[in-house]
Amino acid sequence: MSVFQTPPPDFSLNDVSELVQTHYGMEVRVKALDSERDQNFLIQNGGQSFVLKISNPAEEFDVLDMQNKVMQHIINEDSRFDLTLPVPSLNSEKIVQVEKDGQTNWVRILKYIHGQFLKDSTHHNSMLFELGTFLARLDHAMEGFDHPAAHRSFPWDGANTDFLVSHKKFIKNNREIVDHFLEQYENNVLIHESHLRKMVIHNDGNDHNVLVNGNGETTGIIDFGDMIYTFITLEPAVCMAYVALEREEPLSSISEVLKGYNQSFPLNEFELKSALYLMCLRLCITITMAAYRKSLFPDNAYISVNENQAWAFLEKMKHEDLNEWSKQLTAYVES
Image (cartoon, rainbow, N blue to C red; front, top):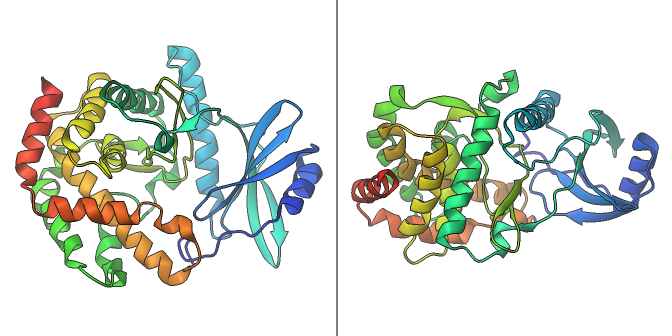
């Protein structure tokens, strides 16, 4: 069983209070936070705030170890190069195992990053450019990092289409839209695969994970659970996918993200041309994963958080000339 097939943990606020007292020696106030396949809680002790993460029962220890180690790697690189990259650093390297209702879960505590989510802020071009730059600096800090868990087969890896091929059957209507973008990917990205560099990336710079301040400046990024060794271009492409949602004319917005990224982490011509196709493929994963997981957990509303917007965007893009879009996008980024 994978984390996508297994129900999330079901710890109450009282359970969490007792857990923290027992394993970390703190008396805390507890508030539940949103999560899709795990459970997250804001815990406060005096003037300090932390995030307690209770992992899905099917989560492997190595994946959590990878997340802890990459955060420490980023912090070490930050101090060397003054990259000013707020990430949820470890409050304790201790990963504890707890049991509830016959199931075991791994538990970690991370330091809390203050800020508002990108989804709750007004986007403008300079902000989106700076967001792209932030993701590039993040990847510079992650350069050289590797871990065996990053080489897993993972549905949210845009370079791995196996999940889409095997799970599109869960889409009840118009599943051929996935076939359309798979074909676009194969004809315009996969044929240039040898030119697409790979490294371990965050892979989930969406508007629920990026934090900004009142001026719209990116102040941090959370949730390293989707990290994977994959195409570097997917880092800006994933972010572009969520920036594009609910926009009548998304080209200018996604162009700013990619231009900001490229300015700090230069991409080659094949990587730039691939970004648009990878962006669309990411949203195909969004609608396919939502359809699949709703069949398993119909009461989990968080599963569908971006589903309707992703459908609307893909319907629009199905009738567009993606090659022309990619040319315009590349021309702007290189200007």
